[in-house]
Image (cartoon, rainbow, N blue to C red; front, top):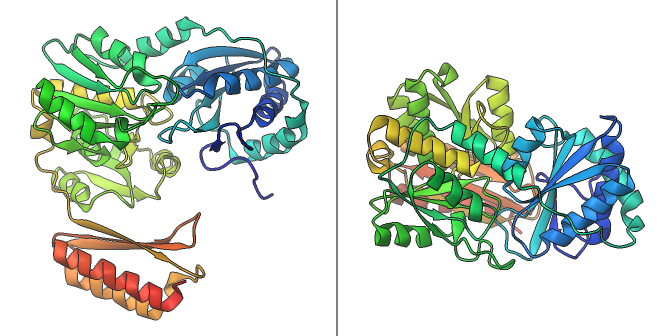
Length: 445
């Protein structure tokens, strides 16, 4: 079956337009309710949302569909995506629905569904739901009555996060950039509860300012705030707070690779890193692999996407994995990336070592990296492009183990993507352009 609704991260689109209109949201609720009644005698489904202006009416539409299927919706109000995943797993819920488009602008939104395991629905269930959504989406006669958020759900999630942190943060100043999103209240509350001197910024959502020049996609803002406030550390979340990026006291930006290095070594020292293995992606910087190796740790590379990172972690038994973008998964504590948890784990490494973020990440040498996109007329197997393969071999020989090249097709566009990374910026640029040129000559549009 060719999917019409579900992508790799739920149903996404422009709010108010198909497939993110009220009729489809109602259809999702009705389809999910039908599925839920086969899982439990008296099923309940958790609903949460970020701060987009479209969130409330989408929540009402999903709730109306659930009630039409005789399933009780429970509303968590504004909460993070990992908060919904955690509460769905630990509470009396058959499923959870998060209404968010993560790092996208406010005009977009999405519907992501978790089952009681706290993981995203299996593909087979999504396909089953999609068939029913298309049947039920015309059944909405109007939005459901007002939903009242259950504040105890927020409290339960924050209690859990706080319990994972064995230290106190008195004497540490943190700048917390909430992206005007789901962490706008939860983030400052959590760190203040643990004793930090919290400077909260971008924490006044108005429905339209989520991710607007702030948050994990715009860390220049956090960098300025950390330096101006003389803070020990800054953390920036995205709209639904499933990821976090950081700024050290010096103003140095710390991405997901830096987090994997610092926290990976801390977990290894504590005996909590099975096999001494960290899972990253094919886009993680070679410098991370080198620094881990020097610490006696190994790194596995998964395809780009936290879904693939998690799959590799489960297959290999790894406890830690993530992406440069700040999606970091701690399998001991969570089923998905969680920006608040990531911040706590990084802070635990700092407090436990008595060192600063600058000191702990000092040996992470970020190798020069060059990305080139080439528009192509077809996705001819790269192995059949002899001149391209010769260019790749020439690049690998030039770096002699001190660099790498990755060439792949985009899964959504007619593009070939070339990434070259190495210890010589001029060589990196030369080979990236050369390989891109060879692709253009072979299959360029």
